Image (cartoon, rainbow, N blue to C red):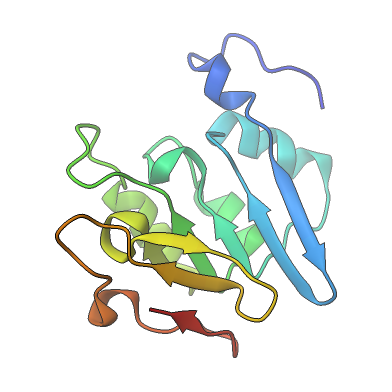
Length: 149
């Protein structure tokens, strides 16, 4: 894909995006890509469906557009975000878009580190200082996969 220029956030919009495909499991990693990248990816026309979406740009309001999330249609969405971050991530609009599309949301600020493995595509590793993953927040992964806490 061509380099995106003059997007207002060229560094993030040119993040590496990757699809992990193993047997019938697919996970889409969006890096810090936002809406300009998503539009270009959608225009490319590939099958974007994924079991898990690593949400772009920490769940900011400038990523995870409704059209993109509809195309990916993830069962689960991972948002890598720091606790008490000054940017207000993740955005309420991003969370609403994910929930409208049926994605179970896992946030590192609430669940700790999330690590895929061959047996369980999502393991929750308690890494939060003075806290452990909260079962009522993290819950279990949909689609027959487990969440280890």
